Image (cartoon, rainbow, N blue to C red; front, top):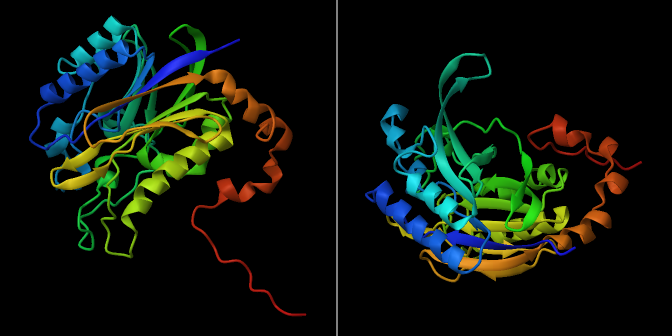
Length: 328
């Protein structure tokens, strides 16, 4: 059986701090229209797709940053995105900043902030939500950085785990869909959590700087993009899944974002890649039957995983030095 879907990576060029939501939403709707014209079934937008990457700006009082967040989807501003999704019959990944009024770990209901993504069905319904787990950066103003990266200030660690849902996509009755956000792609544990649920399409968005912004060592410019693609390709190969990594790109408020959005197959090959720093649509046909080879052979988890050998993975966070060898 041929389970073919057409996937579109909807890269966004820079979103300036002064740019309004209406203008950004209009750009996204145009990309959805182009995706429909090119026969796409799935459209994936970047992380924090509705705004500039605001964690580069420090605020003392987080309530002053509420305008960057969404308290509900759809909202009056984002309704045109949902209308276009229904009009064109698309499945869509949307990354955004979320305010949720819900109980914390102590049971107290309060305002909570997350870096979030959702899967929106062609009906306009939200079928899956994910909140970013691996938050990079720092919480307080850093004097050693050229640019602030305050995700730990603006967001809490995601509390929904790594969910996968089986949902119809295009003419395929059921596709196993999972999500990651930005820094999650660099952690093999993220991919394996999805792989253990037989994920077939991992959608992830990111807003990654094109240059290293810390003054703690040299990193060649070209390695930034290499490491991003390496993480996605390895995650797809080691978990027998397609992956769509979608970037924000270009000069945003004076800071370069890397672009180079990619669609990757279960063999770890890049099938398609963006070549601009602007709004750009990259499309590829994905035959989900390709997931079966890895899943049934080298990465047949039921046959080859050895939980008894992995206890350190869930019992330890920081690394520790090994014992020193002593000659007999």
